[in-house]
Image 1 (cartoon, rainbow, N blue to C red):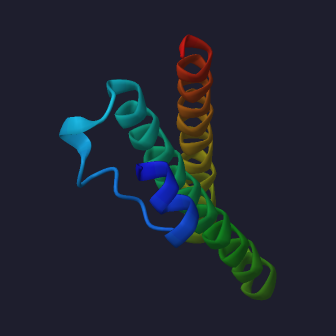
Image 2: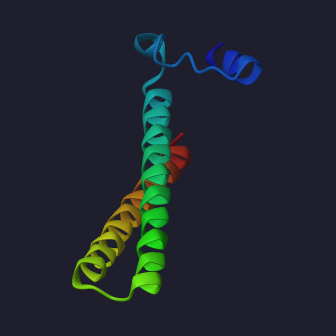
Image 3: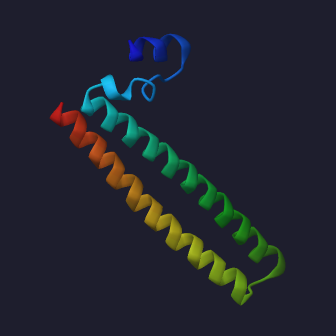
Length: 97
């Protein structure tokens, strides 16, 4: 029923019926949500990296901008690792099911 409503109305009822759903479906939904959240954060970090790079090109290098760029690139690496781990967990859940 949850899948039918989601397909027809593009609305997810998972959270309303969470206590009645299989644990596998609950885990799947939570992993999908986490993947979506990390992806959005990654996009935001990438956008900010591009902005900082543009600022460096326009006004030249400064220690503040270079430090900001390094920190953003480190954050991007951490988020990429998290995203890959989440995708691996999703894959393992699919294989298990």
